[in-house]
Every structure is written in C-alpha cells, then in structure tokens.
Image 1 (cartoon, rainbow, N blue to C red):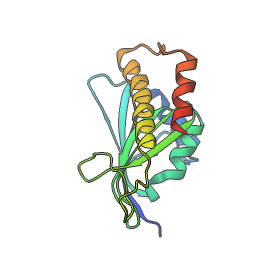
Image 2: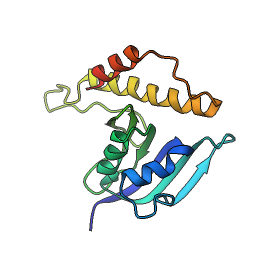
Image 3: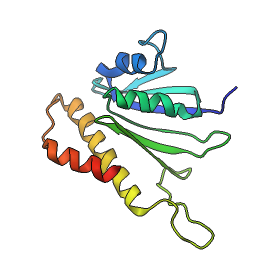
Image 4: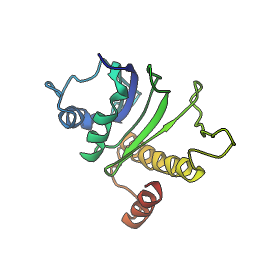
Length: 158
C-alpha cells in the first residue's frame, strides 16, 4: 500500500484523455474521481481522492507529454502539501503551508534549503501555465508570448 493523498488538477478539457493516456490509465476518459468546470467548460478541475504519493510520477509523465496543468495535493503520511504547474514539458512542484502559501524551508542555522530563486521560478512557471489555461477559457489558444520568452522562463525554472 502506498502513501495516498487528495489531489486536484486544473487542465483544458481537451487534454483529459491525453492525460489519462500519458499516465497509462486503462480507461483514459475516466482517470479522475470527480470533475468540475467553471461557467466556461473549456477548463476543468478534476479530483483524485487516493493519489499514491501525490501522483508525482504521473504528473511528470503528463507534463513530458506536453499537457499544461496546475494543481495541488494535500499532505500524505510522509510529505506535506504542494502546489504544482506543468507547461511545455516541464513539471515543477513547491511545498505550501496548510493555507496554500508557498513555504521556504530553513535549516537549523536559518539558511534556506529552498533557494528563493526556485520559488520565483515556480511562480513564473505557474503564471505561464495559468496564462495558457486563461487563453483556453477565453477561447484563444494562441500564445502571445514569443518562444524566446518561454524558453527563458524554462531556463530560469530549471
């Protein structure tokens, strides 16, 4: 038995089946437990109630398949809650407190374990994913940013 938690993922409705295929789900059209959508159903949020280890490996596989998504998972037995974002093949995850705020881990001498640059990179990466999801909500799949802007953001995030 694994270490499970609840997980929520927001993605374009058109990517639901591709996400299921990317994670190897036997029925890629129903890999979630619940599905919600806003007034505009082009973007949906799915919930998975028993996500083994926060589905980290699955999320990385879906990101590598080119699926854009954002989300969060609750704490499990051996890990805390996190937020995550995937865009253009890269998945980044960051820890949060129980109110959803990003946290910076410090050692006993108050030295950052998580560099501030990593937190900034996540925020920028998450914004890029949110921008793509916003465009889907608005019915505009065109990305206004240049490929150079996107590549620069990815370099900063790694």
